[in-house]
Image 1: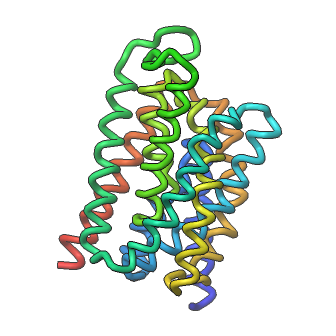
Image 2 (image 1 turned 120 degrees about the vertical axis):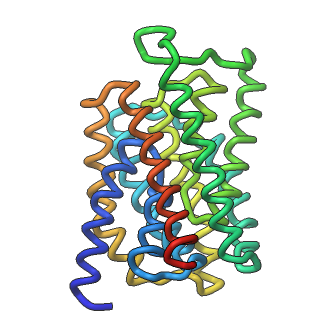
Amino acid sequence: MGLGKFVLIGCCGLLIGVLSGMFGVGGGTMIVPLLNLAFGVPMLNASSTSLFSIAPTSISGSYRHLRQGTVDVPTALLFGVPGAIASTVSASLSAYLPDWLIMAAAIGVIGFSAFRMFREAAKKPLDETGRTSEMRFKTKRTASLLSLAIGTFAGFIAGIVGVGGGFVIIPFGMALLGRTMKEMSAVSLLAIAVIAVPGIVTHAWLGHIWYLHGLALVIGSVPGASLGVYLIRKVDERTMRYAFGILLLVSGCLLLLNRWVFAG
């Protein structure tokens, strides 16, 4: 890889890191189409390299949240631990799946998550925090089991598609646990840090990761994520929801464009 290409990917990583820190996603929904569409990385390798860059990005954002005291650590672990186990299994399966199926899974889940975000954004807030949903399950035990289930699904998708799982954790956490976007953004980042690591190890063992591309992304995304967490305080709850939904739609459209226009 030439120096110019390395710097360009690093600059893209900086922007992705900012968005990752703000919205609580690992950035995979942006990284996968970027690598696949703009830099010609095969879909499986783009997904694996994306996952490789997600862990340090989410750790950077989570560290700032921890310093600010803005993250619910126990809830994040309820999402992250089962997600980490599921991502290991699905990362192993990804080697046997065709590119079109990986892409279809990404587009399907991203599209549904975008729909959920716009739906939540359109609701009237219940209180001054900006919540739009009550907790569906009143007992702590049931809510914990629900968090485990969401984390497992997010981890399974993460291992296959090469994302952190934030675009699953955030909308479902908001709708079912009665949390705000800002609360779920912080929880999601820490959960992603846990979810991504086993998947990275599995993909590395299978030889799927393009390390130079991943390193270029990390150099930009790590400081970007910290900046993104800082910027959360500057944006209101509803604007964050609409912006996140738009971000998901753009990512899905890029994947579609790559598959059916450029890939023929």
